[in-house]
Image (cartoon, rainbow, N blue to C red):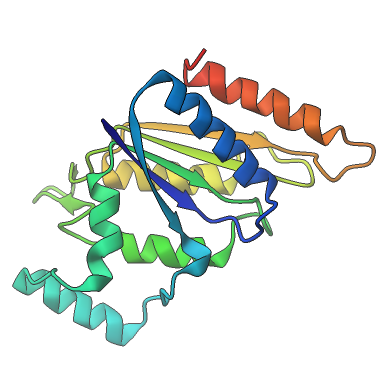
Length: 194
C-alpha cells in the first residue's frame, strides 16, 4: 500500500484548490491502494524558526537526539511514498503557514543530508511531489512557487516534481467549473490515472 502525505495548506473549507486535490485522491484511490495521511497546516501550532530554536535544533542534530515531537512532521515527510501539496496562490506565493511548515520539515539528517562534497543525499522515500494550486488571476508561465518547490525537491532528492494550476478563476466572466474540470483532466492525464 502506497503511503501518501497530503499537505493541505488551504485555509478555506470551500477552497477550490482543496476541491482539485480531493478529486485527485478519488481518482488515485480507483487506480491503486493508498493510505492518505493529511496534514492540515493551517491548524498546526508550528512557529517560524528563530535564533533560539535554530540553536536548539543544531545541538540536537549534532547529538543525534531527534526524538522530540517537533521532528514528527519531518519524519512523516521523509517516510511518504508520494507527497501532494495543495495551497492557493496568494500574494505571488502561498499562505505563510506553509512556509513555516517547510522550515519545520527541513531537518538535516531527517529529510536531507549533504555529503562531504556538498551533494544532497537521499533521505526522503518519495520519488514524486505533486503541487496543486488555484489563482483568481493570471499565473505566469513559471511561478516563483514552482521554482521554490523544484529547489526543495532537489534538496530532498525527490526526482519528480509536478505542478498543476487552475488560474483566472475570478476574472469575470470566468467559467469556474469548466476551468476546474479542465485542470482535473490535466492532472488525471499527467498522472496517467485514466
